[in-house]
Structure formats: C-alpha cells, structure tokens
Image (tube, rainbow, N blue to C red):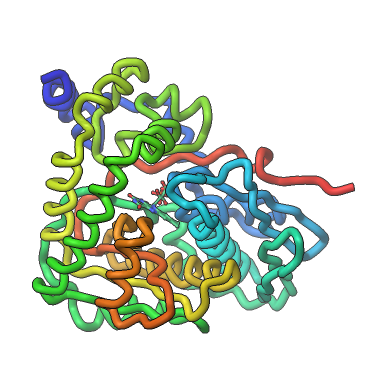
Length: 358
Ligand SMILES: Cc1cc2nc3c(=O)[nH]c(=O)nc-3n(C[C@H](O)[C@H](O)[C@H](O)COP(=O)(O)O)c2cc1C
C-alpha cells in the first residue's frame, strides 16, 4: 500500500512521472552526463569511460593515466563475491569502460589502441595517438545509454536496425546470438527464472544485493554508486523504510513475475559468448556489449540484462548446451526493445577512480 500510495502521490511531479522530484540527484546526473568540450584532458575521457555499464554499479575500476596512455585496472575491493565469484562481471565491466573511453577518444582526435595487460595485476591499457580525425558515431550515446529495467512495448525491431546492432557488436573473439522467436524467448525465460529462483533462495545473494541498493536520492548521492531504486523503476523511500519494504516485498514470486513481463514485452534477446573463459575475453565481451548498447541508444532501443541465466553455474551449463555453445561460456544475456527511459544511475567522482603510482 505504501508503495502504490507513494507512486501515485508522486505521479507527474517530475519528467519521469513516477518519482518525487529528485532535485540534487538529477543535477548531479546532468553534470556527469555532459559530452566533453574540445581538447579534453585524459581525466575528462575517464569521465566518459565510467558512464559505462557495470555489474551492480559497483564501478570496480581504477584508472592510471600516463602521458598518452590510460590503464584501466580492477578494483577488487569492489568485487561482488557472491554473484560474481570468479570476477567475470568485473572484467566485463572493465571492457565496457574501455570501449566508452575508446569511443570518446576517437571523437576527440585520438587513435586508441587497446591491449590486455596479462600480469599479476591484469587490466586494460589504451594508448592514444593523436590523428586529428574526429568522427565517432556512437559518441553522443555515451551519456544517454542506460540499463532500462522496465516493461517494453513488445514491437519487433526492423531488420535494418537489427543489422546495425549486430554490426556494432562485432568484436574479435566474441559471438552474439539474437533471438526474436517467441518460443525461444520462453526457453530463455525458463533459464532466467531457474537462475533467479536459485538466487532468491540464497541469503548471501540477497544480502550482497541489498548492500548495493540505494533507496533514496540522498543515499545514492552519498556513495555515488550502487543500484538506485528509481533507476530500476521502483519507488524512492527513506533507506530505513526501503530496507524493510525490500525484505517484505522482494520475493521469488514477485521477481519471477517481473521477469516474465520483461521477457514477454521485449523485442528480442541478445546473448554474448566469448571464445575463451579468460579475463581478456570477458573484457572483449564487455566491449562488444557496450557498443551494442550505445548503438541501441542511438536507435531509441533500450537494453537490460537478464544474467540470472548465466550466473548460477548449474543453470548456465544447461543453458550453454541449449545454445549449442560447446565448451564456451554464455557471458551476457541482454533483452532489447522500446520503452521510455528511467532515471539515470550515478557515478562516483572521476577523482575517486584515478590512481597515482610511485
Ligand atoms: C557484467 C554486467 C552484469 C550485469 N548484470 C545485470 C543483471 O543481472 N541485472 C540487471 O538488471 N543489470 C545488470 N547489469 C547492469 C548494471 O546493473 C548497470 O550497468 C549499472 O547499474 C549501471 O547502470 P546503467 O547501465 O544504467 O548505467 C549488468 C552490467 C554488467 C556490465
């Protein structure tokens, strides 16, 4: 009752309709999501990189800047050990950030070259050679892309748009399968529900998730990270009420019902599969996904993850066999379709993620 009362009471109060005025939250989002002016510093490019998708919005990265070189290194203090015990999502997230940085650097006259640093401290290194050519069609989408976790309109995507998405996702070492057939989507939904049910039965999963939820704009602003409820289409609440409501209303049944609506209203589902199960290939998957999502954004197509199907090992094995993935691991499950946007997620300040070295 409280949830529906708040939602109805707040309707129409903002451009988003369902949420009370988000005030300073929206101002901060607007500041963070502004395209760069000419001749940006490397730290400005980092500001674009960190707008990338990343698991639970933990922002598990650190950036080391050199003259014309950026290293994107893992921040293992931000790992999510329960949902991501082998740091798969963490390295996918680094790949997403690297791709945003490459796209932004290209727009600003650099030729980015990426290599994987395969040392005791693995990560990604992007060297930036000035070349004066300033075209990067995906660039305007960087601040506009979001994970839109809502019901979509269910309409099919044109063959032309689908081809653009496939072209954008093309990446050495990564395949993307696209499913639009309703029977296939139902099979994928079964895997999502199996994974979600296992996760909802796991107190460690719930407690890890809860630790990254942000129920109010103030709570989200304080940390600059995590999953702000409004960004998932849920009500804004004082954090102490939010935690109680979460425990009372976040059930296996309600979540599974939500995913049924989400899958059945989507135009299709894309599955990303790396050739190898290594951090380097996981980062490549991130690059491929990030370009897919940027291209989708330019076409007015929304995307959201349904990774439950690949996060629970037993479910993933069965799912991989249905996909015919052989020994490869399905890395990401992403639905797409059309829907209005939701409030954008926040990031920590750039200065918090840049590191100095001795
Ligand atoms: C590797 C990876 C895994 C993710 N898994 C999920 C997921 O299972 N469910 C979900 O709703 N979002 C998932 N996301 C989306 C993130 O939660 C999202 O990118 C983050 O909260 C930042 O929000 P934004 O994408 O709107 O900028 C995932 C993103 C990445 C990169």
